[in-house]
Length: 410
Ligand SMILES: [Fe+2]
Ligand SMILES: [Fe+2]
Image 1 (tube, helix red, strand yellow):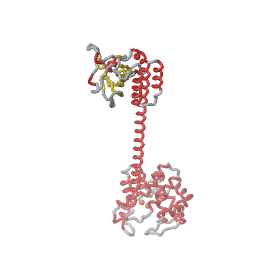
Image 2 (cartoon, rainbow, N blue to C red):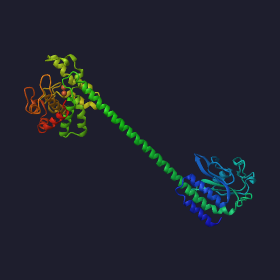
Image 3 (cartoon, rainbow, N blue to C red):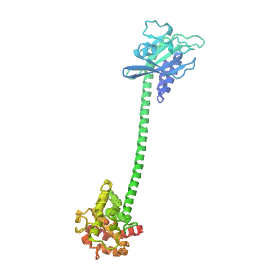
Image 4 (tube, helix red, strand yellow):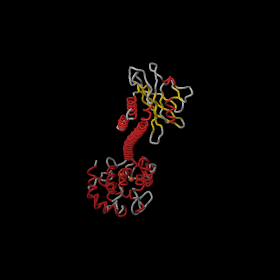
């Protein structure tokens, strides 16, 4: 082997940067055999787990007989030729494997020999990494420059030339293995990210469904409370919209406004629990019946306060009949002690009742309704009943209320 051959080989190995480890091993074995006229050969990769170290055959070639993928292992240490070379980290030339002396620390194991093949000469050298550790072994078998003649011993000179090759091959092998590991890690990371994306989409879909189910069930709850009620149709939907509009115009936070938009409709949910004889009674109520009717506020609070998402609804149900001057029910709460949510729904509820036909009154037009809420009539005294700030807001924006009425009237 001449030195320009060595250079060719080094150039070859350096040119194989983006190969898979398996392909690289096959090519290295092939090139090594061409250079040394070896008829056959095997490349082993060193593996370890804890104190246990062994060689794994990674590529095997033989020009004389077909060989299947190498898949055998040998322990690192004295015993086999490859195991001994890996252990010592030194090159080994054997002229005739059947002539190895019995006292030698390595032996040829004919067990690995193919039935129709006979190993004679052997040239075995270690592959080393950047830290000078053995990471593999190249085992070349039967130097055969002339195919028509039996194998001859490998020349001692190849052993001297192989040292730089072994190092460069070791380095590029290590690099290829690192690259493969990085690729594998990237692949796993990408797969993990894909799974996370999928999970996120799934959770979002579920949340969407849950949200829809939640909205539907509170709508049904609000509807159920109207069964015996004069307030039917779109009343609850419009109260939601007026309340949302007032909340927005007051400059309340967005999430709070959104919550108002579905909580306002729950103001009369407690009517479900009111004695149905009282609820269905036509004409005036006696004081006891009036008291039972007024308890729909407390009943509503009890129904809704169990759910954390309905806290606002519960507070509205409890306080939507309180009055600014403290003459309302159930607690006679006064002024700003009445939750703002309830003060909002109160005006929304009253405006819609004025616009609607009820057993005790005809439907009023927008102008008359605005007059009653801002100036008053025999039943409603706005300054005593409503939050003055919200009356002001209503005065300036009353057309918006009319627009909602028109858009959503029955
Ligand atoms: Fe009510
Ligand atoms: Fe109402």
